[in-house]
Image (cartoon, rainbow, N blue to C red; front, side, top):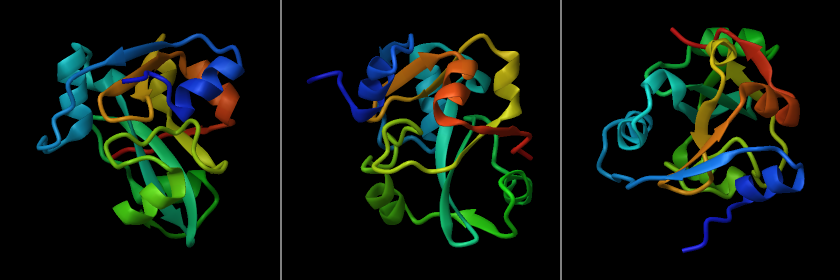
Length: 157
């Protein structure tokens, strides 16, 4: 199977350094991000999950540590909105072009405002989904912020 995804393609095109880490994805895992962290031998606080959110009925992307839950009020405030809720999985898949469990903040079908939890700033590198179940991209938070123009804020409970 090819290791090329829309996420890896945009990073290569932008000449951004990253490492692609493959692991055995468990579709039955209760929490996909925690399963990924365990499978690759990383701390859950270093493996960030990508969540698709509806903010005032518009799509946004939240990237938070896999061992945390997003606080919708904090996210709404950080993104200049009033009301936030999780997007339905089918809508997230249609919007991003990725399957749930493989959604990356990179290489989505269209540019979507993205917020990154500020805990990433304390890490040299973080893992984010690579655009396919069983793929993680190891990247510096600064490169992710620079490429996506992320809002950086405290987003978790």
